[in-house]
Length: 147
Figure 1 (tube, rainbow, N blue to C red):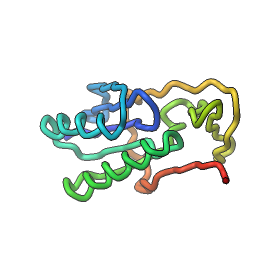
Figure 2 (figure 1 turned 135 degrees about the vertical axis):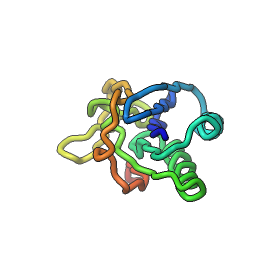
Figure 3 (figure 1 turned 45 degrees about the vertical axis):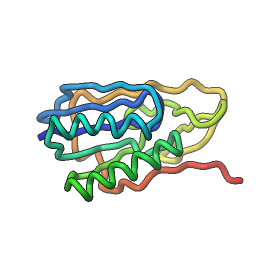
């Protein structure tokens, strides 16, 4: 059995395959989440028995968050795979995350804010998984500006 970590809130998508909680494979792909995610998981589901899917629930690309959530929630229900989540700051050492235009999401004292003209942090897959770091609250973390 393997665990999968999916960072889908920005491009390229990063997918990690973990065996015995250790990273054994990295998949890095550019493109639209709606096209890439089904392709990647078609291959993964044929090759592995998946125990947990962990995804970055936001903030980031609104459409990517929405698509990823629906995709993984469907796998949870139809394939009986545990579905867990963490905010994107976990996967980039709490660095800024690209929003829209020259805006970036930042996290200060647990609160997510928007700031301008920053440099986005690079996302990474942990070398070793600590399942206790992840939450069963998989609800998307949408951070939208007030209109």
